[in-house]
Image (tube, rainbow, N blue to C red):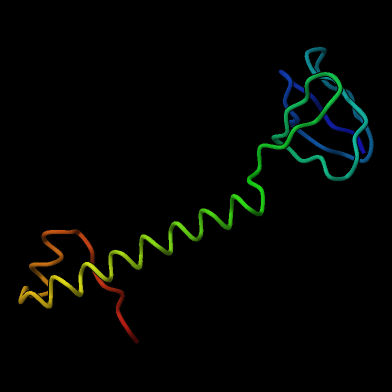
Length: 97
């Protein structure tokens, strides 16, 4: 595979080279290199999130959703209507089908 480099970034990945502007250059790479990777002259670096980072983000999003639903339930338990709770928090519970 060949990575097309422009300003230390991979802007294309192809099986074969083609003519490009003098400010760009082709570099040999393996099939794991993707558009958007950085290239420092010898090493490709991914800026994609790792599986662990994705799992952490998803867990944080789920915790936030759980906290919103819990807080909403507590406000309703205090006697507020759903409209009042939504006006205070901006949270609208999902519509069940």
